[in-house]
Length: 263
Image (cartoon, rainbow, N blue to C red):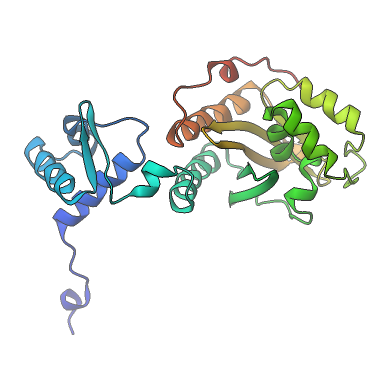
């Protein structure tokens, strides 16, 4: 078998159609075919023909202001947080943060009254900290958990804390509920833990909020090299707001972008 015969046969029109579906799937708004053509670099004629075929087959659906995903993708219409869609969008956001900031990125989510670690993308130079205690038992000591607690309604926050102990994971861990609640009440729109979960690690988290979703996006850095400033927090907030939009939020939370920066 020669080299040409060993290579897989790729159908260009299928690749182009899948690219269009991928772009629409990750857009928070309907996209006109003209915009799709501009994004992909395809000719308007090719784009319109592909869109027409995808609409006919149910993979896309036409709206007055553009195309959206069709009924062949019920998870996008009925449950934006279904595993495939949610994880794909989360992974993209975490990879963006890892590449921009050079730090390992994490995303946690509050669901059914508990904290859940959704995904992690490692940075080569700053690998993940050892997760020796699960998030359900360490929310009080992690930026991931504290950001979610700060975002919860007061009743839900108190309910969570009433059901969970606050173990001392390091000498810097806040183990007093009153002190923790005071810190959460004064949250500037983002959270930080300085060696509260693990000695040698500083973590920063910002909110990801969408319909039915309360989550936090975080990074971890070596404590001796962590520079937590407005530039870093703003970069995290920008990615978090984009992810919130992709997960169904109607508009950017302008308040979070202008949150007071304090350490």
